[in-house]
Amino acid sequence: MSAEAERLERLAQLESEIVDCFRCPRLVAWRELVAREKRAAFASEEYWGRPIPGFGDPDASVLILGLAPAAHGANRTGRVFTGDRSGDFLFAALHRTGFANQPTSVHAGDGLKLSGAWIAAAVRCAPPANKPTPAERDRCLPYALRELELLARVRVVVCLGAFAWDAALRLLGGSGLPVPRPRPRFGHGVELVLDPPAPVLLGTFHPSQQNTFTGVLTEPMLDAVFRRARELSVPAGAAG
Image (tube, rainbow, N blue to C red; front, side):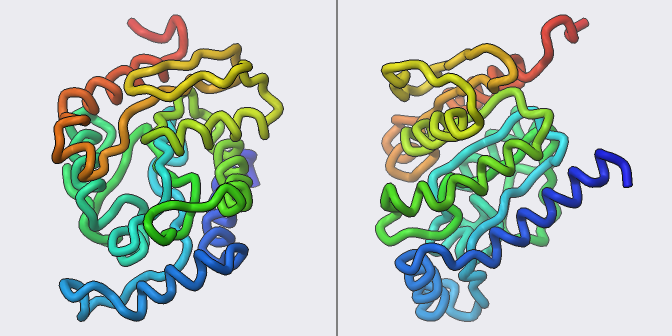
């Protein structure tokens, strides 16, 4: 087996391991309760009700890191940022900036493909009130750490919100890479450039309805972040 084939096999094994995780009793209970009780609009659907693996291009140069699955979004559909308003806003931006082949993400078999990007969440199970505890975050982060190691071409991590920004800083520290002290503060469009091989961290407001409906995050703002991510992901000297 070639080194590349082994990497892809290990990535697939990791994603299967994530789906079978039961490490956090509170999150397990909540995700399964939601899957049983369902939302009225989805009463006829079978909910996924398990942890959500990463999704995208294994050769991605950009990793998009979110907070956690939505109870009636990814926890229902089984694919990260799929089936909720946040995902609608996110994938439309990814399509406009050339990272996705279509602007919608409705269900796992809808034909969506990513090019140059991989999407994952810092916490893989839907949490009550969309708020994981620090302990739940820390139990889940090793999955993202292993994922980042296997996504060998990632040069930029786009952090969707402050929670993801903090998680990304913890990932760098867990990888043995130096993290500045005091830790850089999150902000929309903030960039943290460290010495290679550390990826560049790029912040953006989360595409939640709370932000998109109020104009805190607009389409041009998010598009600009992903265009910048593409620029940063190109190795020096590769352009032209």
